[in-house]
Image (tube, rainbow, N blue to C red; front, side, top):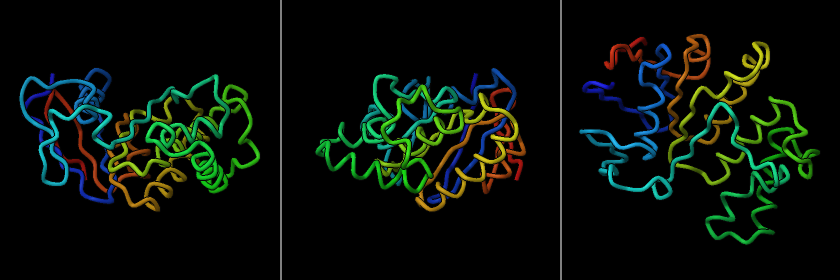
Length: 199
C-alpha cells in the first residue's frame, strides 16, 4: 500500500527505489508505466499529466527480471521488434538492431535463437531492445536478480554506461543497495508505503 508517495526522476539521471519484498516498489513502477491505476494521485512527464495516457503511448520502456524475450524470434528480430511495431520497415529495423548489437558485443549472435544464449547475453538483448526505440524513460524492475553475483556486478556497470550514453532518465527498482549505488545518482527507500531519501 503506497501512502502519499512523491518521486521525481530528473532528465538524464537514474533514480533507484529500494525496499523489502512487498513494500510496493513494483507497484509504483507499474503505476509509472501505466500498467496499474493508482487510487489517487497522478503521473507527470515533462510538465504534462500522463495519468490517463495508455502504456503504449507513454514512450517508456520497461525491463523485467525475466527478460521477457520472444522465443520464436532470433536475437536480431527481438531487438528490432519495437521499431517494426512503430512502423519502421523491417529491413531498416534489422539494420538498426545490428548496429546496436555490435555496440553490445552481440553482433555474432544476431541470428541465434534467444533461448540458446546465456542469462547475461539475454539480459543484454533485453536492454538493446528497450533502448532501440529511444524511450523517454527506462523502467527497470529488479533486472539482474535472476543472474549470479559476478554477472550482476559486470552488467550493472555495463547497463549504467549504456543508459548514460543514451542520455535517458531511468527508474531502477532493486533490493540491492550496492546495485543502486553502482547505477543511480540518487536513491529512495520505500518503507510502510512511504519514501525516504537515502542519498
